[in-house]
Image 1 (cartoon, rainbow, N blue to C red):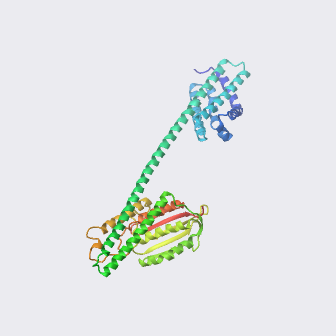
Image 2: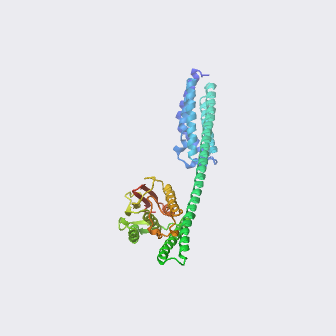
Image 3: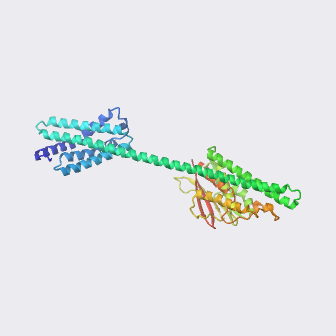
Length: 438
């Protein structure tokens, strides 16, 4: 039922009065909240944050009082509900709990009711219909505001709970995946160990034969020595990986000259590359002062270079280091480039796939070498030394996946990123980006 024209005029005058008293009403509301011991969060936010969407709620309330028909009143009520819902959202974001928000609404409603009572006392000639309508609208405002805020809170709580469930499910999936990857890594390691011990056992079995000629004895002794060295390296790598996974390794951050360390490493490793008819070039400033763990940086470059040497048949390896150009985020980079066969999946291959592919391909060549009729230890042909054995394109020897896994773990320990570019037949580049300062 629409109010009569005189009543509408009086309600419009009341709405104008409330608009003029807006600052006083909001001030009284803030003081009431500040003195309420059950509302401690309000004192931690600014006045603008505290008032938030309440002026829009009061605007809609005033328009509802002066509405000429039910359509205008309905529009004003919808705007009122929407503003109240947004207020509930902001209170959630400001750290309020639901009870605190409801208590604040209660204080605001009491302040508005007090304003209505004072207006009625100052305008005793008003028709009682005017104030009765205003009080009814205030009750509706209270109900709508509380319901809208509570509904928004409920929705937010449900969304947050769903998000937490999703995060837990993702974390559990990642944990299961990590467990499977670790189990696979140790299975691969056990396979590599068995391969190395198989070589040693066969070489030993041949060496104890009394009738073995001296030339073959020397050759098989070389096989045995290489097998023992390979086994020792694999066990060392497994110990390193176990320490990294167990969290026993710690980064010892101190200033050091990365240029000096990398150049020295390349100088001492170059004869090993020359033995394989490969070049090893070093490119970078002779001095590059950085902060970090010098020993772990050297372990990273050592693993990457030795892997590159093992995988490369022709050409060689470049070790490049340089300082970053962004002074706002000081970094330095280390690159190890080889001219080897590369990996099958091409540029941008995820590192995890490369780790898996490296060990998988190593096992393929092991199975080929140990196939019936091809075991050189049990044929009349002279044995082929491991260090001189031909490598098929795209293959890496056993244990390379563990070396790359150690590099990845060391990079995580040093807050460094590990990037990979590879192309079949054109080589592989590993790029490590370190922070220059910690």
